[in-house]
Length: 87
Image 1 (cartoon, rainbow, N blue to C red):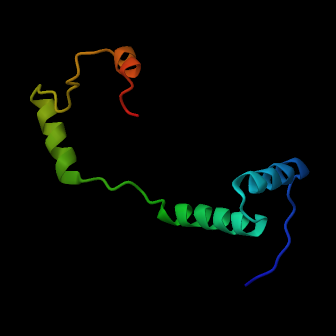
Image 2 (cartoon, rainbow, N blue to C red):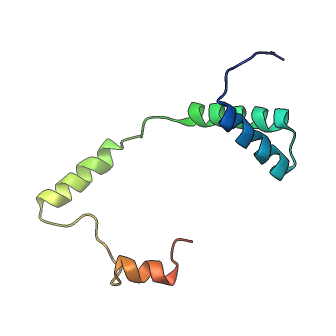
């Protein structure tokens, strides 16, 4: 285990303490879990995989005047939001 010190804005640290109390989680645990989440999330960031075969097929369909991707829904975006889709 490494012990270190860092400078943190006072207002941010105050908000962190309050969050710790609200969650009923010790500050050390909350800080450790937060750092782990950021590091693990950053490690999972990768460049998107481009499938060249699929891209070629989509370009071919487009060159033939065919729409490779179509919106099938007949309702407007506003109507869909009002229905609560995507929740």
